[in-house]
Amino acid sequence: MNFHFEVLKTDPTGARLGRLTTPHGVIDTPAFMPVGTAGTVKGLTQQALGELGVQILLGNTYHLYLRPGHERIRALGGLHKFMSWPGAILTDSGGFQVFSLADLRKISDDGVVFRSHLDGSEHLLTPEKSIEIQQALGSDIAMVFDECIEYPADHARASGAMKRTAEWARRCKEYARAQTASGQTNAALSTNPGQSIFAIVQGGMHADLRRESARQLVDLNFPGYAIGGLAVGEPHAISTEMAAIAAEELPKDRPRYVMGVGLPEQLPDYVRCGVDMMDCVLPTRNARNGCLFTSAGRVNIRNAIYASDPRPLDERCSCMVCRTYSRAYLRHLFQANEILASILNSHHNVAFFLDTMGKIRQAIALGELAAFSSEFQARIGAGES
RNA sequence: GGACGGGUGGGUGAGUGGCUAAAACCAGCAGACUGUAAAUCUGCCGCUCCUUGCGGGCUACGGAGGUUCGAAUCCUCCCCCGUCCA
Figure (cartoon, rainbow, N blue to C red):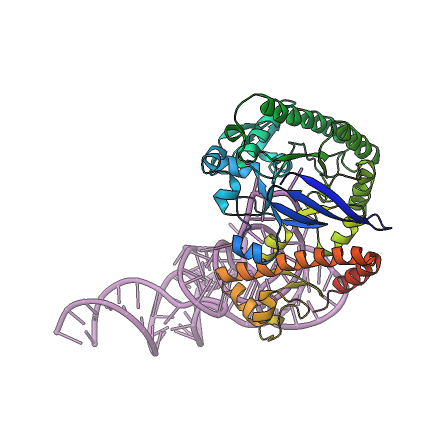
């Protein structure tokens, strides 16, 4: 299977129903991608991910490069084989670590010098190095190395990062092209010859820069485009505004991916911007911190009111956790610091995000996305459980 | 019967004259978490009053007295607990 994207339906809101084909399977879009930074979606086995219907998940260049090392993963046949995951994988480039490890790095036009968060050692990540690592990992979709900036960032700063991101995107694409043309066998370069590379729109919260960024990247002709640098502290309305502006500039026949979003109630908003893919650590991280997403809003399972509550976590959820366990039990596990708390909470939260995306797809198919969104968001926003 | 050691807020446990409503940790209560340096982080955690403030009052370091301007801290007696010796 080679990379292929097909828009099956576009509804009046701009939302798209689609189908993304990768070397490791077909992905129904709009899709939610659980984050598995270090070769694991924390708290969930690959078998569980499969049973939950996960079609694509994320891995991280920076983390896997540091540990266990991309050459080791290459030698073991690539990330799919290494982690025994038959589905699709998208790898982030390390660009987000430019943002999240701000205290541990130095940026130049060449690339970024990181001090490892594991042992303090220095490492240079460049666009070329990032692609080299992602080729070794053999993800189905690699991301260009980008500069993700903080919020707020003034026009000059956002512009600088946007230009650097465009230049780095060009270098990523050129590196991959040169590798392919080099005559070396594919296996020596990449554990996944069918890998595609997506570019990343930046530009901070400045509409003109978002448009300019998108146009620059479209000129470079990538098979898919991400919109990055969102959900970094700005109001949600600004976030969707930026996503919509960028999406307008992107080709209709290529997948659009908003990186790092979002809350369940925010997902329909991005979809209505014409976004096809999203990822977020919220379901797994919050699960480990006792914050559970339900059809009636967020539940902090630590709260004393659940101590004797025999009801399932979410009466409208049909996941294994909600079919099997009570709130009282989930609270007990969390309070007792039991490993199973993280496992069950993660299972439910990921199931809830996937289920939400499934409902969104169904609503698009039925032409009812607007109605679904307002009902869904009102119910979740009520926060009653 | 004797010799030591010890009794501190829900727990463990610092503190040996004022900066102490009393460290720290745990437990408890609540909040946060958006391309994962996160099974993490933050706040509260004696009672009470109000014009909610680096605010007032009360109670508190086994018990009762005492010394002192001032005591969880020093003295006396008593009550418990532990170890050892008879």
